[in-house]
Length: 425
Image (cartoon, rainbow, N blue to C red; front, side):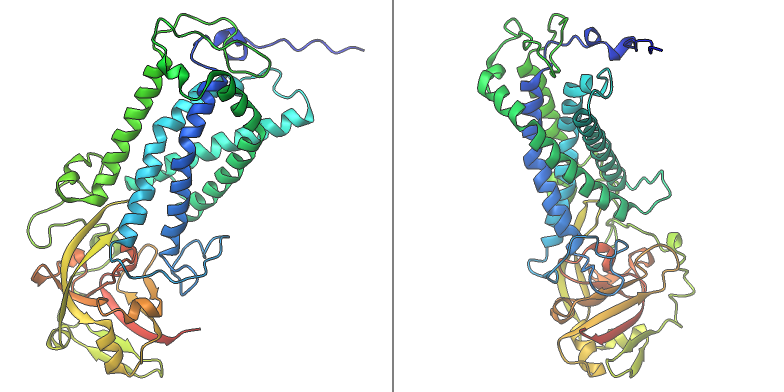
């Protein structure tokens, strides 16, 4: 009994459906090569940004440190280190978007190859391409949604984004290894930039061959390769600069048209970005009123209770320090409060202790953060009581919040309830 032949489906499964004369190994190789530096930058800064959480201590990371080890504590110098690292991560990731979409457009005929699987080796390649396309789109889209504080899902963003990025990295490394000869031949035959010199009238399709995205029945070009690549390049620079502007600040902040907290988030001394309001995390005015007390615990278990008036009576220090958030925005303000080192001295904790801080916050992650010893000992690390010369607003953490140089904003805990000095393990 013989099986009936499997006919090629109509539409995109037929080679003649894809007619753009721009597609071919050279264009795919060029766009892939353009993606690589941005991707490596995004990967490196993503790793470092997660390291800034000091995931190896306390409950600092919902990702439990991930599968990549960390061998150091995040430094506090320079104070803008996390702002620069995470801002670069967001800007590089968003700048990747137009190039990635262009790359996917250039290779989309490969996604509709027929028959879908021709051999075991082809099956492995198809699976790797599926993982590469899926993980790249998921990592990109979820990262952009996170930067816009939009979560149309029920899973925890940080670990899922983290592992998707690892899958993307592995898939990309495998894909580059498999396609290295194709890239080398494409550039060897046509040059790296020579096709970009061709005008629209000079634009010719790449010759069709086995295992190629070049069209078998090309249409007339409507844009040159130079125009196509330039359009992608301009779009990449434009969205990248816009994303970076919310971190750089100053006059450039006006370019941050997609900034989730706006280009002018507020007026007055407390008129800067608020990531979580008191109401959104269950902190009420009653909890932060006259009965509020801060409990400070020493390494020997002894504790002291402070009212806000008592904290204000202690020696105060003022420092200009940034708040930088995982969404990519940052802002530098003038903070006034009690140095953590002064609290350590009062409770009898010598330098070299970790500090666990707790919050009145009832909802969401990071109700507690742990500082490494180098962060707690920095003289600029403050139990902040005022900002820009006035009391903190409740949305900025009244009656007291934590401010530490170079620390992720989410660990600069607001609405403090406890400060506990613990021995380094």
